[in-house]
Amino acid sequence: MQNEIVVQCTGVSRTFLSPDAGAIAVLQNINLDVYAGEFIVLIGPSGCGKSTLLNIVAGFDKPTGGEVRVRGQRVTGPGPDKAMVFQDYALLPWLNARQNVEIGLRLQGVDKRTRRKSAIEFLELVGLGHAVERPVYKLSGGMQQRVSIARALALKPAVLLMDEPFGALDAFQRATMHKELTRLWKTTRASIIFVTHSLEEALFLGSRVVAIMPGAIGLTGELHVDLPRPRDSMSPKFAALKQKLFQMLTAHVPETSDAFVE
Amino acid sequence: MLLRIRAIGIGIIAPAGVVLIWWGVTASGLYPEAILPSPLAVAKALLEWAFGSTNAGPYSGTLSTAIWASGQRVLVGYIIAALLGVVIGVPTGFSRLIGSLLDPLIHLLRPIPVTAWVPLSLVFFGFGFKGAIFLVALGCFFPIVVNTIEGVRGVNRTLVKVGYMLGASRLQLLRLFILPASLPSIFVGLRLGIGLAWVLVIVAELISVNSGIGYTLLDAYQFSRYDVVIAAMIMLGIMGFLSDRVIVGIQHVALRWHREMSIHAE
Image (tube, rainbow over all chains, first blue to last red; front, side):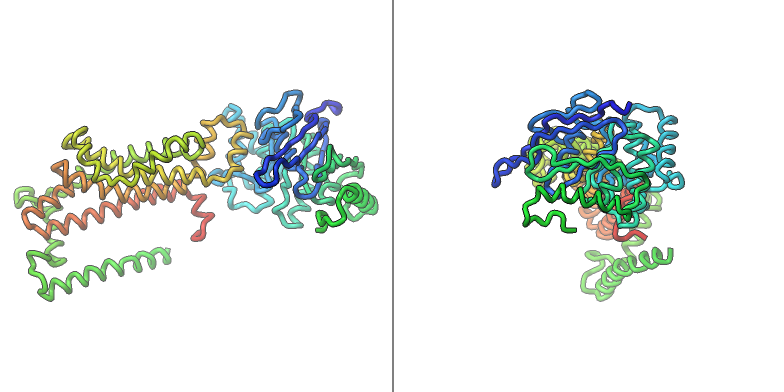
């Protein structure tokens, strides 16, 4: 199980054509294998292509070179095996929490009773057992993101894709969600690709942190994070890893860049 | 609740003012009663039209028949327009190809006044129910279809991603994701449409049918019964108002989520 490759990116490139700047190579020759149960964090400054890579894995975007396989199947378009959690939650405001989780199952042809039961189970799993019938627009940002995670997990995807999912939350909610996500990852053994530009978030969550820098060919580097969970972002070991990751990233940044000034 | 009563109270002030001015003008003797009947005379005519014995006069007791005649034309024409407007509008707004195909046609036909269609309507549908339905449906169609198209075009693109990610087919995407998300805009079209429906049914009744409130209005004019003319105008106002309330009531239920996210949410 641990050796199964769930996502395989082979020589993935993505070039955008712009009328004034010509061809811009956002991703060049990216190779990345994600093993079952891994928590991969893609990190890099804005414009490095990390979200583009995630969109390509999700099937929302097509690579201009190379290919992505999910469970051996070549990705040609989006689908429930590659569930995405969006930064702005992207819930359906006319449905309640349960219906938001159910709609994906309904589209899979799951019968009414089973999908209802399953939706409630996943909402309980993300800690929303008390809000099953609440309209989603009445929930806080953190709770809405939990619904979105429940919706994605209920699809039982091969890989869970998360695009800066906690970017819109305040620092306290974010800290809670980091602990929650760690717990969910442990209980469901989901394979996750998580995109962020925050070093702390990357090191708090990832089992492997993968760095991409703008304009680089291939991945810039990777770091296995073997700190015990839940991690303590105040510990010296954490600080040392943060230093290491920072150096790995800044080694590739021109001196004038302010990409990591936060 | 108190706020609601206050809102209704405030709402009554302006119409009451208009009646008061009207009464003042008639009381001043500026116009003879036969030309501009007083509010009281019109109220009498309205009551007789509504509740009078059918053999007491030409209009006596015929209001319910007139409402029914106009009402069913409005209802059938409007429903046809709403169904066509949404069914055509959603794919036109969603697909670039269908959009380029139909957009110019819609915007070429839209500025043609419905009255300009009357001759063709008479040729194809003759005098009667079908012609009236055609005119009502045609006129209501445009605000509904245009607002549907624009509503769909305004849907957040992430919703499309979500739909496909969850495994929706293209049809399911339109029905379960795009359509509900564009309902706020569709309802703008539906409200504009219902207002137009009453305008158009009168146009039809003035020209091509001989029943209904509009027909009564024209008939009363030809017999110089201005009290009945004004009574008919007031009925049109009331019918238009009530049918708008029905649409708003449906909107209230269907768009609860949208209302509660909006600036007037309590």
